[in-house]
Structures are given as C-alpha cells and as structure tokens.
Amino acid sequence: MPLIQVKCDEGRPSCRTCTLRKETCVYLSFTSAIAASPAQSTPSSATRLPPVSCSIPDLSVPPVPVPVQPLPSPETSPIYDSPSSDGADSLALTLLGQQQPASPSRLQLLQEPVYIPLSGDLDEVKLLWAYSCTTYLSFATQIEGVEKMERALRYKVIEYAIVNPFLMDCVLALTSMHMERLGAKDLTPPRSKSIVYRARAFEGYRKAVETADPSTFPALVCCSLLLCAISSQMFLAEDTAARRLYVLNWIVVWRGIGLVLNLTTPKILGESGLMDIFIRPPINLNLSALHIPTNLLFMVTSIKPSDPDFPEIEIYYDTLKFLGSLYKELKENGFTPILDLRIITFYTFVPSRFVDLARAKQPRALVILAYHLALLKLIKTIWWTAGICDPQIRDICEFLGPEWSPLLSVPRAATKLTETEDIAKLLLGNHAWEPPAMSFEDMIAKTEEQRAMWSGLWVNNEGRAQEFFPDRIESA
Image 1 (tube, rainbow, N blue to C red):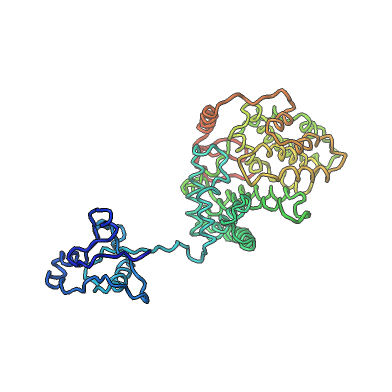
Image 2 (image 1 turned 30 degrees about the vertical axis):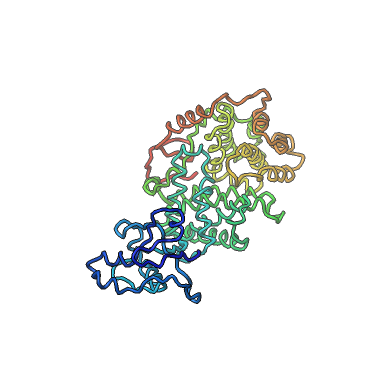
C-alpha cells in the first residue's frame, strides 16, 4: 500500500485525496488524540511530540499507512483485549517516529492464524471443514432438513471424535474418500495420507472394541456406522482379486453395528444424543412375507431333507421376510426416503447365521444377496454405494454358474439398467407399474407421517418397535 502524503501543517494535517475531492479529512492526529487523554499526558507534553514530516521517508524502513477512516473506540472494538494488539501498535508507532502512549492505541493490526488441532495439520483442518459442509450427509437418507439425524451426524459425531482419536480417523478417512470421489483436488489429501487414515481407523476401532471402555461406547457406535461407508472403498480397488465377492466382507461390517450396539443400551445411546443416527423403520414381518418374490420363496420351500441347507430353512425364510419388506415399501410407496432407509439398513436386521451362510458361499444365500444388490441400485442419494452393485452381481452369477442361472435372471438383467423406474418394474415383475403420483411436498408429509408413528421408539432386530429405553439391545 503506498504511503499517504500529508500537508506540512501539524496543526491540522489532511491527506491529499480528501483535499482534491474537497471532502472533510478525518485524518487521525496523534497529537490531538494523545492530548485529549488527561490521565496519560498534559497538553504541554503533547506539543513536544515530534512533528509529522512531509519529507521522503527512509526506504530502509517499511512505510506504515496511516488510516484515513475513524476506527472503533477501545470500548467497542472486538479485539481490544487481544494480546497481540499492543505489540502491533507499538511497532506501528515506532516506525512513525512516535512514542507509544500509555493507553492502548486506536491502531488495530490483527493477524489470525488458521486454527489447527493438536497433532493435526492443514490437510486435516480442510477435511474437517469439508465434513461439516457436505460429508456428514453421507448417511442422511432422509430428505435434507427433515431429520434430526443430520444434526447428530454433523455436530455430535465431531464432538465425540475430538476426544476419541479412532473416531477422528474414521471421519478423516471418510471425508478424504468423499473428496477424492468428488474430484475436489484442493481438499483431497495425498493418497498415502488417506490410506493411513483408513488403516488407523480400522485398527483403532478393533482395539476400542477389545478394550470395551464404557466411556468410548458412543464413539464406537459412530465408528461402526462410518466404517460401513469407508469399507465400500474396496469395491473400487484396483486389485481385481480383492474386489471379487467383496460384498461378503461388507455385510460383516454392517453386522458389526449390531454387535457394537449390544455393548451398550439404548438409554446410554439416547443420552449421548446419537439415537437419531440409528433410526430403523419397524417391519411387519407377516405382511412382508406376502411380498417375497415367488421364485425365491420356492427356492427355500423346495429344500429337501437330504439337502445340506435343510436345517437352515428357517434362517432363509426369516431373511426373505426382511427382503419382502423392501418389495412392500417399493410397491406401495415408490421411491421415498423411507425406502432408501429400509434398503440401507437391511443387513442390520438379517440373522447372524445368514451372514455365516453367505460367508460360506452357500448358493441360496448368494442368490438373496444378488437380489438385495439389485434393490441397492435404487438408491441415488448415497455416494458411497454408487458403482458397487453391478460388478458384485456379476461375480455372484459367475461363481454360481449355470445351475443357479434361472434364479439369477432378475439381478442379472438389473445390471443392464440404470433408470430407477426400469429397475423397479423389473424387480416387481410388472412393466405396467408406475410410482405413486406424489408431489415433493406430499412426499415430505408422508415421510414425516411414517416417521412420527415410530418416533421415540427403538426398533429391535426382529423389526418390532418397543420402548425407547430397554435394558439391553438384543442381538439376532
């Protein structure tokens, strides 16, 4: 900034700009300002201050511009108590050839450093900012602004992450993954850092589960949810062998939510402010059974006593009832946030034994997984599910071979479709089906109406809504 020239009239100096514009100059006179403070100096002492010179300044000293507009008084200045203000003002007055007055000067030169948490760096600050702006919505399947879930994800998760490093690593890993997916180069840390965040997140989570410290339970349940999204990165891994049938590992991560919830109680979860994150719609299993696809129902009911899967008929049937609840929601209400929520929480309901059967690559379990992956394609609002369904369906079809090909015709056909309505018609087996005509406002109202029926209730692993504070969450 160029030095402002003043007239050689110490009695009433003014700047050249105001003189040319014929405006009243409000140039601050240090002589009059200091003389006006009787507690600090007398008028006679003020006259002994060196006059402001109009000569060319010594270029060896950086020029300091003199403000041309009145500054707020010390009483109203928001940085009056700043510990750096006096030092900055002292430097400014020294460069002007003035003595520092005893009272705080009206010159306010302030530099604020970027806040960086302990043991953090600028990349982490950027990631935390990005999380609070957009990444926190990664699990908000509801319409934006409708659910308390978003507020809990945005504020409560960070509150617990600050005091639990393993949760902070989860937040950083998820956000770096999101920024990379969005192509936000300025906010994406180096690939090596993203890998470190993910590795530390899983390792810290494992150790916290083994320790089972009650003070970390709220952070643990948050971490168990975030890891479901973080682990989806492996679906896009460059290693083809690692991607093949990775869904079998992914469902284990989802079941981990129930295992972690079993360490605590809904009462503790409610008091922590995190209950809204783990909202699950209740399920009427009797009605859902009526919507099970007929070919899948026949697949289970036709199991013969000599079949190794015969003892597992009940497990398969229970799982199909949860799958039927997705078909029921789709057929009756169409594409709504509640449908997205039912699809995304499917693996939190299925029996643990079904997960074991899928991990053992039992054909009937893999067929059911293929149908759920086809339903997962209906979700367009969650970025970390994009692009993971089609390759996994093809892997299942290839693994099972021609023997199970007739049962996999629907999921296989879904891999060739992209429009949600086309996929829905295929799944429902009704090419004349149309989603219910509903305006955006009506969809919000219907979503709120459905949610209000089970608000304040805890939905157990059998889909039943029960009292908000049972002693323990039962595991399936």
